[in-house]
Length: 327
Image 1 (cartoon, one colour):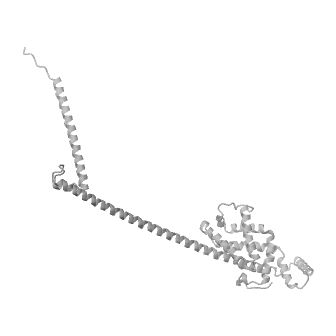
Image 2 (cartoon, helix red, strand yellow; image 1 turned 45 degrees about the vertical axis):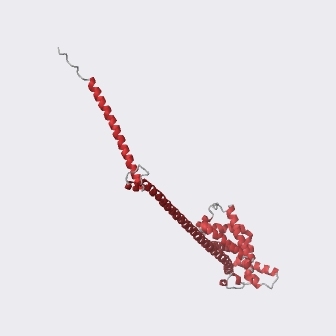
Image 3 (spheres, one colour; image 1 turned 90 degrees about the vertical axis):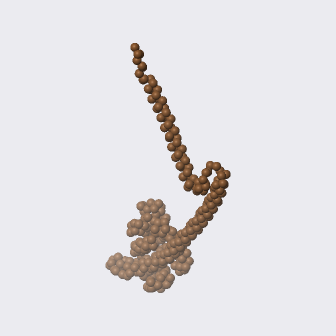
C-alpha cells in the first residue's frame, strides 16, 4: 500500500488507499445488516444513556425492527461516502442534513455530539473484527509484489503464503496492515463526524438565535400592549375626573338654587353647600338612618311600656280586695 499522511484528511489520501477502502467495504457489506446491529448494540452497552434518545421504541432485543432499520440507515450513510470518496463534495449535503436532524434531537432529547465518538469507536471495533477474519489484507499485500504476474500466479502465491503461515505460525505485517486500514476508516468516519458536527452546531446556533428573536419580539409586543393599556387607563381616568367635575358643577348649581330658597328642604346656606359633597351626603344619610332607627326603637319601647302598664292595671283590678260590710 502507498502510505499517506492521515492527518491531512480524507480528501488528500492516495488513490490506492481509496481502492483499499472500497475493497474492504466490499467485505463488510456482505453482512451489512448484522454488522450494523452489532455496532448499535455495542453503542447502547458502552453508553447506556444513549437509549434515552429513543424513548418510544423497544431496543432491548437485538433483532427488533427499530435496531435493524436504524442500523441499516447508518451503514447506508457510510456506503454513500465510500461510493463518493473520489468526489466528496457530492456527499456533503447528505452529511449536512444528518447534522441538522441531530440538531433537532438536541432540543427534544438532549442529544450530545460526544455520542458520535462512541459511534466511531464501536464502528472501528467491529470493522476490525470483520477484516481480521478475512484475507483481504493478505491479498492487498501480495498484490503490490505480484502486480506484474498473472492472476494464477498471484493465487498460487497466496495459497503458499497461507500454508506457510498455518504450518509455521509466521508473524508478518498483517496486523500492521490491518491497523493502517483501520486508520483509513478512522479518517473516513472523522470526515463524516466533522461535517455532521459543523451542521449540528450551525443548527443549534440558528435555533438559539430564532428563539432569542422570538423572545425579543414577544417582549416588544408585551411592552406595546402595556403601553397602550396604560394610555387607555389614563384616558379613562381623565374622562372620569372630567365627568366628576361636571357633576360637581351641576350639584353646586343646585346648591345655589337651594340657597335662594327654591328648595325648602334646606334651611341654612352651609348645609346646602356641604350637601354637594358626596361624603357629606353619605354621612348625613347614615345619620338619618340611625336617627330613624333610634326613633323606631323608642316607639316600640313606648308601645311595650303602655302594654305592660295596661296589664298591670288589669291585674290590679282583678285582685283588688272587696270592701267589708259596715255591719
